Length: 219
Image (cartoon, rainbow, N blue to C red):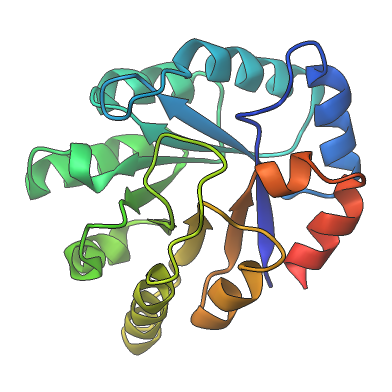
């Protein structure tokens, strides 16, 4: 079954409450929280995303899917754990070494939170393999992280397919989430390749009816 995680990065100021309620009614599975620090990526959304995520926790029971695009992963994990998210995903590229990756995985799990690892388009999929038995999800970026509304990179479909085959071969239960340029045109490709969680922001928020597009993405 395919799930949808709606990125709230571009929710308009002043329309937060109405938008979040409408997304919940439209049956989005998660609220996707894009946390950027202006260092690991150019954009800085840290304060805004913490405010939005805190507000969602007060008005909704839907799970938070937190994606950290930050250099200081440890400090950010601590701050967002306070919101009791469903899952926290950090970038492999922001870690020092394998030992550092495993330390972060363990710490998140010890706080009753699922853990995911994200990889940028230029990172080889094989680099994630050794960590798959210890995590709940691998997030494959289908655009360069840090900017909304980018064009989907078609060559990432092969990466998703390769990851899915490896997960099946090793009999793992790791989810594959894709993020970047996901819309009604690109969704069928990534689903066919094996993705089971789709992150969409612009495609959903610009639609006239959230419910219709979310339903289509899940098909």
